[in-house]
Amino acid sequence: MANLLSIEPKSESISEQDAHYNTEILAAIADNEISRALTLVHEAESIGSTTARTTFTDALKKRNETVVLSEQEYNQEIIDAISVNEIAKALALVDQAEAAGSPSARQTFLDALDNNKTPQTRVEVKKDINQQIKDAVAAKQTAKALQLVNKAESEGSTTARKTFVDALKARDGQ
View 1 (tube, rainbow, N blue to C red):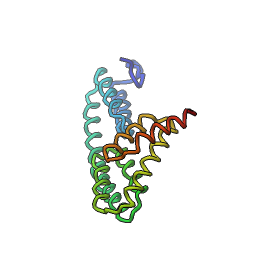
View 2: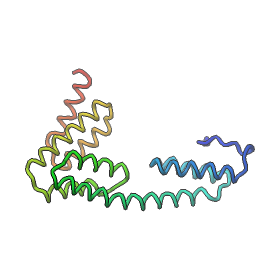
View 3: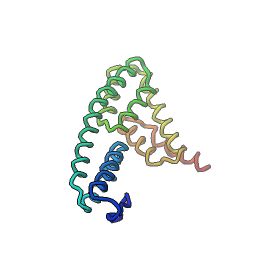
């Protein structure tokens, strides 16, 4: 396995290499690149690191604690946005929260919609999701568009798949 950092064992001491790996592990976790961080841990351990795994687990624990606190804040912001019928803002918050690792933001959004029970709200959500699908297809983010289609269909959408296909045809000039 090639070293991601290309550290030459002869040019630095083990403690200097440890420090470099630990820095890179922390950066990878901060960038939510967990598999890269784990690869760095394995590389560091292969050259004798005794701190890489602890750095990895401590950083992951700290990151998860931060996400839990942020998750509660995101969920409240989502509820507040729905309560004043700011659906686009609520959807943007859901996207941000999910990007930060929140497992509950989407369900909070759906629950807030159900509690709000404004008929216009469902129509706006359908339009917002369909627009997000169109935007993802236009940006050639097909995987993201398909995820949105799946989410929309799981939420009862009957138009998401057609929106996706139409957007693909429009993008490809068909």
